[in-house]
Image 1 (tube, rainbow, N blue to C red):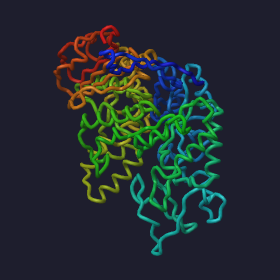
Image 2: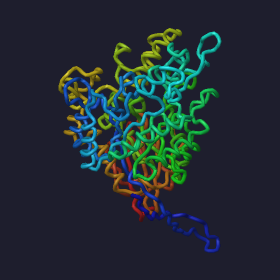
Image 3: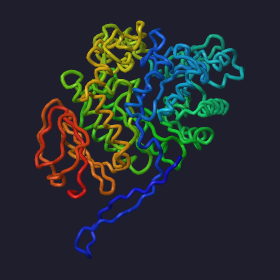
Image 4: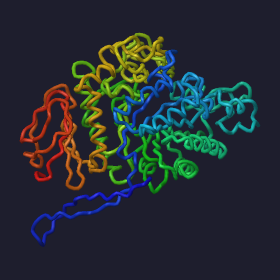
Length: 578
């Protein structure tokens, strides 16, 4: 339900006739949604919790952990795909949108998960994968039977060139050509991912109607919305070489909105690798009636080589990062909405990418959490992030169990990239880093399963696990609980302006949040070295309430400040001192 909320915002203007600065109050009417102050927790079901002892996480395992998630304080579970699938890409290749993969459970268990989560005020966000299907989906099985099959135009087919080769040079994101030859009909079909994931033809109105009908079927079951996998690809125009942000993309989303979730109180977030702030406003400006928000990845790709991508990592540059964050906070500050995240099922572990997974793992993981959760937007936590799970260095590439890593390892090593260089890229950025089983306790298999897990457990599970974190009041887990609670209690965190501090400092990421007379200061040391600095006059001598810290409470801002390695804190300033 929409809630109209009055939010006072103090504006300062110089009034020459009075010879002084006068405070003026402007009242903004903001339509607030329930997801504005929500925190989302992503579950990768295969790796979360195994209840039936087959080594694969399942829906019953998730149900068994709902009390833990309720205690953490999250409002939403983003569930990576649990639909029926041959699992060529671990569920992102769907063969039946209206059934559940047997390894995960049954449709009845899915309905039980929705109901049990609702009892705890937690909503379920389904992963909508509609850029492509599995090649085992009935639509594709029919489509490849003949060129005049009624389902032929559900997918993208083209004739070979005169020499029999692929229609053009477009490449798959998983390596190799984006075209696969089908001997039965003598044509190629298009696939931006695995050849077992043929792309749907969104120019066909029947495809749109089928997807809309399926979405409404799930919405009627009471889900809280959709995370939309690579949704910026559905407007592609293959013959023009346009795959991302096609000219009809936003029309397709507006039609989807009108036909499905537009009049429902749900959350929709699009995965959009090619988005800019200007395009993000098109997606998330409420008046346009498209999506709630999008995932943008500009801050993620800062650690990728500009030419070679994520397989050749480059050093994290904090000043670049601050520029990106500031740009997005500003661009979506008054219209649209930001999603806030460090990692997900496709990305490496946050503490390994931006912190210190060794000596300062706890301190840097808390710092990263604070830096993110005080920004304007909706935070997303990926399973295990709340206990500081790390990347893993398996000896064999096969141990990563990831179609992308395996496919590109073969392609790149055949092209001359050394095994050692490719493995370093995998250690840094493989999707497998995020998919090792959840570390629940120090027992065999990290408490994930009584059987051998589908993927090896990270060997550090005996030290890094939920049980240990729950028993330690100074743990990363308890730090996350504080951050989630603060977001629900303080409107300034949700709606306040973002004002950067120390823009050019190479080690500090700091900012203010302001809403009316509420004022927060957040300071984060992104380095493993102490940092001493002189505060600007606007901050000196201010006192307030220490909201959260990873060393000791900070209640006063003096003239000088010395931060310990990866030290981080947030202080709510007294209104009398500001």
